[in-house]
Image (spheres, rainbow, N blue to C red):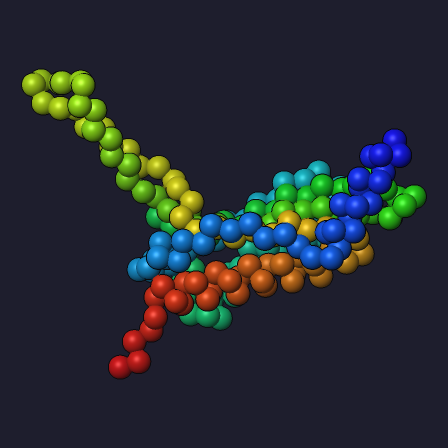
Length: 181
């Protein structure tokens, strides 16, 4: 029990110092993307985030940041989705820290891509067989890992969403420069 508590204290201390960043920023993949459908999801038990934040809050924050930057947002999913996911876990340490939440928040661009596979060892009607299928693929992603006391959770989420959106918008605008003429 002592070892587990010490590990938790060390982890919490590290998280309070700063958030970890996980990224796969394929800026080139954002070239020519005309618009995005925004999708948000939260993975946690209801009692954790009930009354603090919800999917609509996340989606609205992302859509507003896109629109302010001139990035088109649509109400339907055709080809490209801007997906924001929040995973939250409550650490049961009331006697030591109070209510403390750990989270991973990620922003990803999901594109429909055509995957083609030629199978040379199968011949159908005398021709090499080729199979194509359309699949969803993450072409750009950026994430944060962090922690926050319950009382500061909404502010922490607001800051993280703003940071994610700043990174996405900068990459999108770098991949799609506006013509000055």
